[in-house]
Length: 262
Image 1: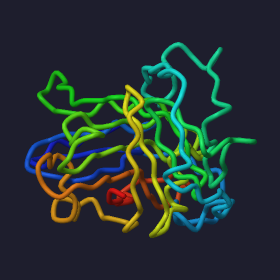
Image 2: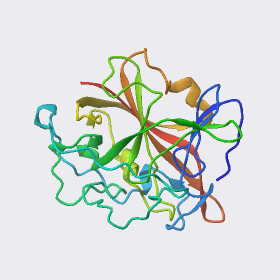
Image 3: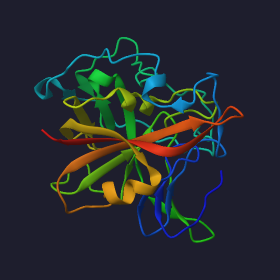
Image 4: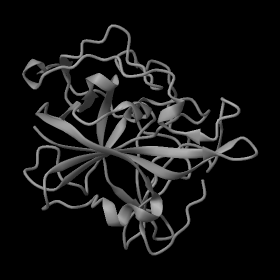
């Protein structure tokens, strides 16, 4: 994957998708090598209109959500967003498959530690801690997890913080172009409840206030991703792209969902 180093702060959450956030360089690693082959010929957008399912999940009031169980494994990702040791033995049955769909028979009133859940959007996905790393050329990047996990950006506000912006980001797709769980963010809408637990199982509850496509060049003016002292909010991020004439997909925009505490 090509990573252009310029005097901007960048988050890359899909193949070649860039979020510009400040005057330092950072990238959220995406799947693939910069452009993916898209399996649905004829579409020129990779975004909400391409989901195969509309929201069908239940509304779950905050008081009905219970947290139990133990923290799941943190899988290290290869360059294509897959576990470095392969998928053998990996259980994804309780994780949204993506494309607007939720896991079969899921109990939307139950959560575990380290998890993001938006019941009405059919989204449930493990959340692991990820920070910024520096490569050999001095570029700084976020080590985004595998495609079936999302990453909490350590440089953003803590999940249980009293102020600032908490950022959770994840791949929209797998390296073959098929949907990943975070594609279900396309099906969020204002008013939906969002639930997020930290590693210890502490539950935080939110309500979606905005969902928007943001050109990468405008993100610095619209989203303060490393703000730890401003107004309290949660920002969930994935990618949005376009199909090129040769059938590949290039990600030049991002899809951001903003929520405020309940």
